[in-house]
Length: 143
Image (cartoon, rainbow, N blue to C red; front, top):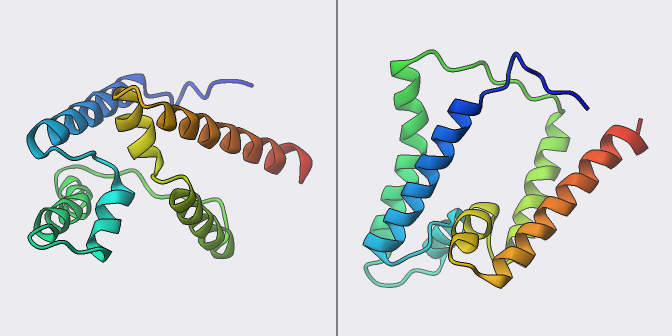
């Protein structure tokens, strides 16, 4: 294994992690809710009175942020090294795993671990183990 030093971005990664942590902390402090994307999106389909406004605003912000960034800076070109069938199947598997795991990686890995949730620790370990196994199978067993 070697590190791709040309594309190694520790400062950008650290900055992104700090922003995610601050956003998660502020969201739970100010809104009383966990910043898990699957829970926010799922709540749109289980409507409670007066509950959908902040969810829609949050999702609009998720879509508006990269668009605003594109106006202010030159974004890196998007490169997907897979065919559309693989991308669609992967997306469906992630959605299925999110449903069975009672949350997504952002909900469990960022918000759940920061709240010292045992369930989130187990889910994050399972996510990581499945990811490691998938990479090993794709890169070594299917070659």
